[in-house]
Length: 194
Image (cartoon, rainbow, N blue to C red):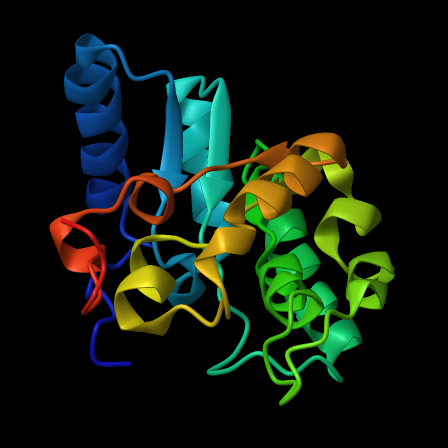
């Protein structure tokens, strides 16, 4: 994968360097938890180890199961996400994961992929959504810096308030992406207000 990092997490010097930087630099700035970007490139064991070594109060990993969301492969996505979460426990601290399966289901629930734009709320009842499987380890969201920048599949941004209301009322830890609500330069689309 071209954007993958070339970091050898199996190397003790690398591990010590990462935990030293987190403990001595980031915690000194007031950070008490971690958001790990693109964790698919290495074992969840190391995320659990870094969390244990830094006494993290909160942790979440961005694990994208495949190149594209397939609503018919719910068991596979759930298994990949939960396998990664369980790997983190082996490192000493079981961490949370962004519920990418729910993110995909939210898009379809609000009309994406349906030529008529009809909603399909049955998607939210799928037992393979991480917020249903393991609510304590699910961080729910609808957009982030990657999917918003590349191409949000949310059909109508006017649905965001309803989606956020749903997320705040269901299990899991809701996460609002600043760019989807207030916009950033990278998130502006042609015709959007400045």
